[in-house]
Length: 178
Image (cartoon, rainbow, N blue to C red):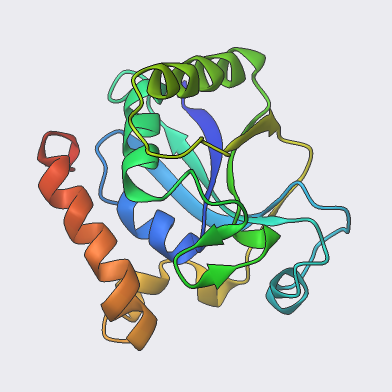
């Protein structure tokens, strides 16, 4: 198995996870916390915004089925990379836009992708997505895993996550699991 991993922060991990579980070539999606300054933070601690962690999804993918470029294309389409520490009504540093990897080549590809989006003026404001080495990662509590799949009618899921999933499915039909 030659799967690769990339860790992405695109606001609430429920939204990001719900998109990537539908994408071909993604072999595992796990919600968690990355790049903070305390060990094994709880959701409640991360929600204070004081731990330095971002809510993230750690993706494992098969590079023979999908590419990091496709993963990044989806990432920049399903969240707003121009709002610092905010996604919609979710505010705080835990909701920052970020790309984290242990592979320097992945970080360079991400920086180049952002430079391309910037030169093409894809967004009306500057991209504030941080691109950093993955310093630490901790899985989120079990009840956060597959949250949208288990609670599609819960308020946040119905009104925030659901529309993101629908946008992904419409925009990226070519990348859906068969």
